[in-house]
Length: 410
Image: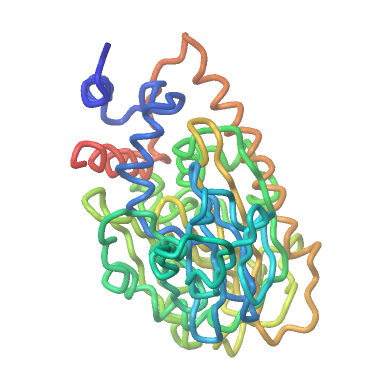
């Protein structure tokens, strides 16, 4: 019987640069466990936005793999994260997806914990029992311009500020600190997390699969950079460059910070940032390109552009001038991934056209769910063989190199 080290070594030896991975990478429970230990648990994952817990005592549950993390608002300045496990005998502490309370009370034996995680009450315990030794187990948590991140590493996590400080100017400009939640969408997908990520990092499938998405964007942009920087053929990037440069000058004149981040496989989180044009005449990603809400953040006028920002393969933002979407691809098991979208608008927005605002990405994500689940079903076949990547899937090679390096290094 192969040990886990030998199994991974065997699978790694079967990989071919420029091709998709061997099937076990997408189907094996053993590989998923290694993914969790070596990759998923070591990264800062975007769990949500502070607008989802506006009051002290508000909480929600963020599920990763088999873990549940409580995200709790302690007070105006402090957000905490704890594993959702009572310290008595391990019962799930908080039931459901979200709630509110001055204390976190276990429904099993009524142990209660403060919003700071400290044990407040435990009935009929022996005299030598110490409440201070039985507080909730914390998870690493940080906030950045209203966005909440957690890391499940048992060790010291990778430095948060050094990793993400480069994004602060654009997050500040978009006004994420003061945004409010307009809508939340849930699209649980019966597929391995790598298939979900790979689908999001290529636009080779956009024309055949996404009529709504394609209707809002210039074809030359989708070909060149439709799934982020370095995602399309090099010659298409070169042809689109003059259009992009002209738009950048216009957008910068309106005060928008315009720059690009394009991490390589040697990076810790595989970050990316691309800002580009919308389809001609389109102000935003709605059916007719007309606004669904007021301008977000520090904007003074419409600049006909949009942004795609990746904190990691698991956590993305797509932002238009009037609304933004937080994308979370959260691995749950070998063939199950939570796909969640949170639509944000400016905190001062009083009129929002939800139907038009959600139209594009709701339909696109339903389509992605279907094609990714079909992809997973095909890979389960004994006749699956790794396939050659196209020139419009260059970002998948970078992602694969990044992922395999993490497995090998760990």
